[in-house]
Image: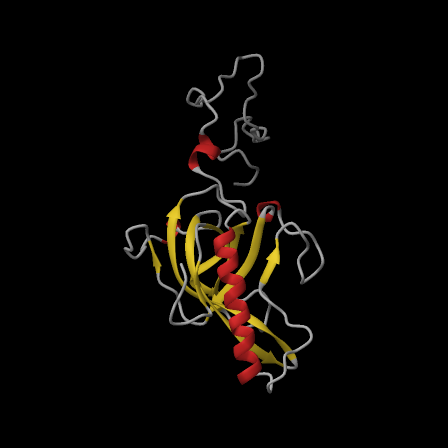
Length: 223
């Protein structure tokens, strides 16, 4: 979907979500400002969404030249869209397997975004929103100049859940966890001891009064 009013605003087609933090703000590093955020996996087969994002990024760059970068286009501009078949710009390591065949982009916001279902009803149950589900996401691109680093950021807008998907990040379904045909064992019973292996509890030897020859009351000399 294109946005005729704001050229930097895009609503994606169906995408997959990862690193979902839509109900509580999250900070990846200590000292970083917590924000609501999500990583968006855009299938490379969705050429229309990719074209809209490219156009919105270029519109944000043009706005940055006029308002952030003193009328000059920087020779290097950091953009938020990355190739999931390549390596992460943060550390040069390959993206995770779930990113293969996708464009990868992280969007964030200081304000909590609206999260709705297929019928545009707000999702109240937070367990229905997780990494691995499918959704449409509204994002807005903006230019920044932060401590000399110039680039385009991605702001997070409303999120619409489209369908469930295989959870990412270690979460598994009830069927995967318990659907293995496990048969309960009979109820546990206390083991029965035979006379051969039964041992009497230890009892101290009986003390005998040397004068009367009778057991001493209490079994201990002098008591």
